[in-house]
Picture 1 (cartoon, rainbow, N blue to C red):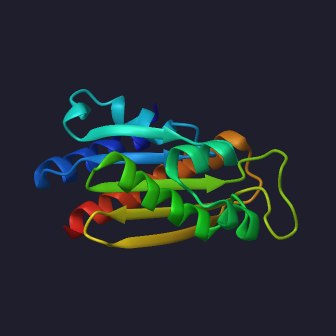
Picture 2 (cartoon, rainbow, N blue to C red; picture 1 turned 45 degrees about the vertical axis):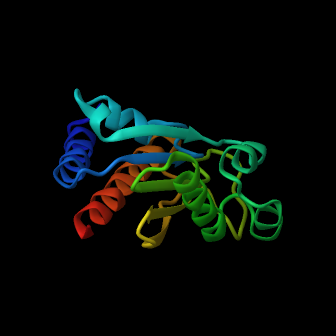
Length: 164
């Protein structure tokens, strides 16, 4: 893990620990890398409850309850799907905070409307707070899109934790 990832993950854990918060992740294009970055830090089990890896649409529906019509009408890579993933993770995990990520890491899979490097994030709190962020990283290569996505997800978790 890079120093930047380690610092970001530690900051999330420290912010959550200071407030007694538990977290979960709901990941598609990052395939568990956010949960992996957090759990790389010793002692993270007092904050991290679980991670959902929902790479397929079927997994998003079955594990997180993302409505089929959301996927049909907006696609897997959309604000609506990211937000539904976050709400579903909150419901299933009974944690305080979640972050959800869905995007196109590449090298294929992009289109004119949804290019490679498009990633949607949603961070939600049991208190009702919900934030969305859309990033367009561009075709930087699969590894870099995923790394930047992990850093963005960690930043959103930290920001939400600090609001509590």
